[in-house]
Amino acid sequence: MPQLSKTMQDYASTFSLLENNGVHNTGVEGVSFYCASSSTSRQPLLYQSGIIIMGQGHKRIHLNEHSLNYGAGDYLVIGVPLPLECESMMNDNAPLLGLCVDVDLRLLNTLVEQLGVNKVRKSAIGLQKAQVTDKLEDACIRLIECLHNDAEKSIFGQDLVKEIIYHVLIGPQGDTLMGLVQQDSHYARIAKV
Image 1 (tube, rainbow, N blue to C red):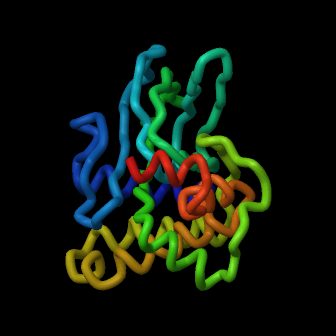
Image 2 (spheres, rainbow, N blue to C red):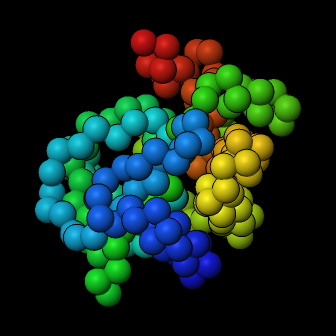
């Protein structure tokens, strides 16, 4: 995971993102970059559907009486928008860095059809974490690197988003995304609202 962290650090530094903590638009539709130069205490937050890939730092999410920790080397899959409480912690005074990818339902449906999967393998709740695989890390690095160049961003950006969603879909928490395209699933009904 050191390469993903370094790539995120380079991106944040090149575009002076650490001077303005928060979520930053990358110029690729559905992709944003998160950075924070300080830890935060527990506070309410609405997590939107999508994928969050952490490159640096650590977060703890609280949903009712449950809590979930995720950090560098993890990704989070959020199937439906969820009101949560979240706290963040820096590691070794290094800023929190993450990549946020929205999941377009048309693209997701196309991927599911191409994979030939028609059933959710297991019951999935709306919020899951998993470890970033080598292939997912590679796709994330290539996406972040292409953000430095407007032509590459325009040409490759959406293809790399598709690759990232594909790797999450076939991963251990893919059922959270799969539930969004199952017509009779709980998440599909919520997503249509």
